[in-house]
Length: 331
Picture 1 (cartoon, rainbow, N blue to C red):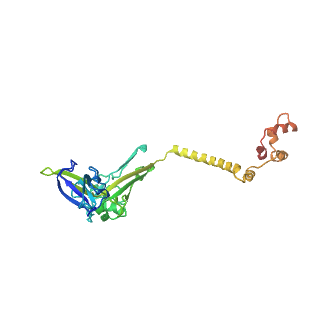
Picture 2 (cartoon, rainbow, N blue to C red):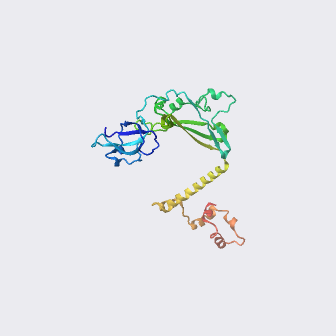
Picture 3 (cartoon, helix red, strand yellow):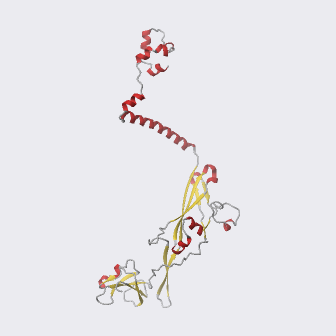
């Protein structure tokens, strides 16, 4: 198998000079492009193998002279198995419960509240489970119920893990006090949940290192699957205040007046039919016609504006420049 990478476990994996004796060697089935070589120059010592399990020693290993070889590397043996387990590691954790304690505070209104019911019954939290209708203030959640609310099956997540988002939303009307301020929960799956993507599900690795009686270094590598919860809290509160109300009313009235002004500006100076609109908006009145009809429409006009020394010539010169046309017509 000329394209398989050779992995060698040393007594001391902390990369000392490359002359240390080896314990054993194994072969890895997956080919690595940067692990192939034709001579030792293709394997610079100290260079890490991308997606591999160690660093190169500087040697190119071949079965015979004409074959393509593989670079020897320093690393831990045996390498991690790439086979996936079909055992649901968390299969019996469906009835586990988690306790989510949350506080919300609105400093502007000096108001705070918790998602835990205030009761004198000390055994309440020991016997309740969250239910939106029966126990909305019980912070004990069953894992199976949380997963079901995301629209997925718990046993599917128990095999490879998952990331779950728990959203707590507080939408409070403080005019009625705390009676209208309740937490609302929603649940969503955050990981991609695809079988072809390598970043789906949730898992991580960690190792424990130790030495045996002879001083050889060993490690135990753990690959851990689990369900990770991300708790996100959002809050909004409101309360009546007369000052913002008056400001909003005034702003609305101002906008109405500005709207009328801008409409007239567009219709009188920009539209093609502006002349027609101007005729409809304004009515022309001749002063001579109003003067002739003055006694009939304004019988009290003379008595109201007659000077002490009155004659018709003085009356005409007295009222014409000072009395507006609209007032003469409407009186």
